[in-house]
Image (cartoon, rainbow, N blue to C red; front, side, top):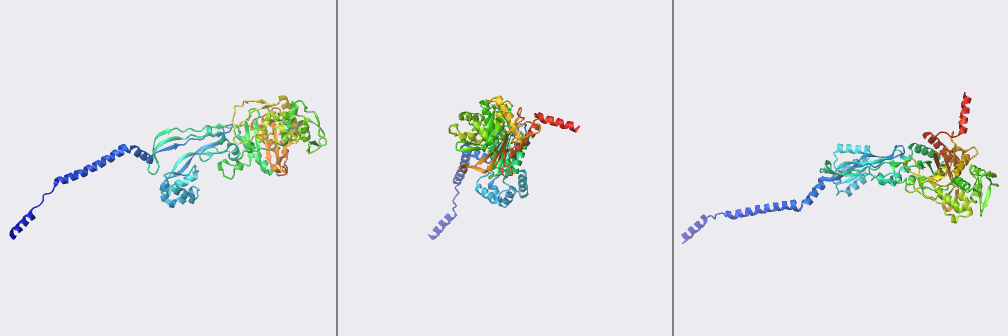
Length: 587
């Protein structure tokens, strides 16, 4: 029995179970089928379902639209000399994700770009999640070279360059008030740059490029849109006259310790502004945040009471109405006149003088007697036709209209003060436009800062040509030996002009006894005027403050150069006779 059991156990031990190959094959095939299914499904999903997304992601990393720079339009003077130009410069950008990994070089990079290292680190940290930021736009060549040297020396990565245009003003402060300037995006902020920004502005193009992982451009694929340069703009200004006027005005302001001033030159025939200068000045190539007050174009934005420079207009109106002639006697004795509760005074008792002498001696009493003969409405309408109380509409932003109070509220004394330039306010350009009426034989022409074809348009007849010529002849006596503006004389030329010295209004405090505004307005040659110029010097604190001593010399110095530059022949026969006599004596 035991032996039988042992043999049975031995047989079981010797029996080996055969492997199940069929199951194994099925398992392997199932696994392989699953892998194929997953691979095919993944490929299908990516190729069909996610195609647009994956392509956009690839394009975002390696395909980029970049800008094709365009040039902002140039601003030129009347002779084609550049006053504002755009030059190509480098703009530096960075990949913050790459640059923050090279912190040891950030201080050197900031030094090369003249930036604050702390501020640069803060900007990089704030933009660390981005792949693009501007380091500094429109850098100068020295900074661009310094960064290039740093990149090469330190193996710095994540920095790239692109080309932009930078605005440059060759005339600097001489033209700053008129031309203005642009911001970092090349948009006009002041002056002509702002007024004509739409036509001057450039329109950059776009192109599609391939870039590598470091954002360097590898190849250009296509141009999306073409760049369009801005339109060039020709101004009426003459660069030569602008420099001369600026130099002489600056000298007058400094010598007379004034706080500022302005001057304007007009071409009588066309109404073009040939020069417009101001003090103090500023350099548009280096605009700072604290020079806002210096950037005002005072000739257009600042108003002043013109003082005695208004007297020729009252005389013109009296002549036009037939109330007086050039030689009509006017009694100014005893040098003062009661008007209502107030009294008008002259510097001296001129006694019995004629209408011409009112202008020659700048008599307040004489001009008051003429003004009070004129109806208030008539006087207001005449001032209005001359352009007072209304801007010149020359297209410059921020121009002031000045103030011409309505005649319904005039008292008798206010009418008197309006006759010698108090109670109304004007800009230097408005006063020049009014004097151009006398110079143009009684016709008012629009003034412009843009170069024109020389033909006047939209003329308005303000006074008769005979009246204008009579007033010009009377104004010539102002520049004579007995007049108040003899320092405005120019050898060889007849000069017609008028001085003005007005106490400065201090607001509610009334008129100051120590602050004045000195004015001279004139035209040359007096027989057939080519130029009109108005000079205003604000608060001279030197030895003199009179218009004939402070502003008139500026007129003489500038107009002498203008007449020579434009080849205007002399018209003073007396001077010609003196020259002939001198030549004969020398022989």
